[in-house]
Image (cartoon, rainbow, N blue to C red):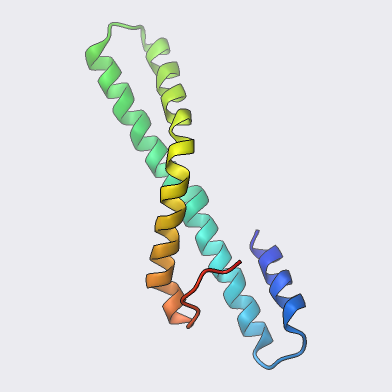
Length: 110
């Protein structure tokens, strides 16, 4: 949660100059990372896997549509454990290469 990251940053900084800016950076970084790694990219990936599997099942089987849809759902859900780590690492790389350079962080936040 972005606000937890901000509160954590706030507690560790004491009364230094630029404290609000660093807290804002931590919150924005966490929000962007969570949006990409937990919502946008996994949602798109699972959607495309489901669409492809429904298409393939439709062309290769004679199963009724409800069975194909349930099979597609199972396939989509079973991709989750395999896509988590690559997506997380890709988002870290993306942010390290772009947004984090803008605010001179260049490293992952804990």
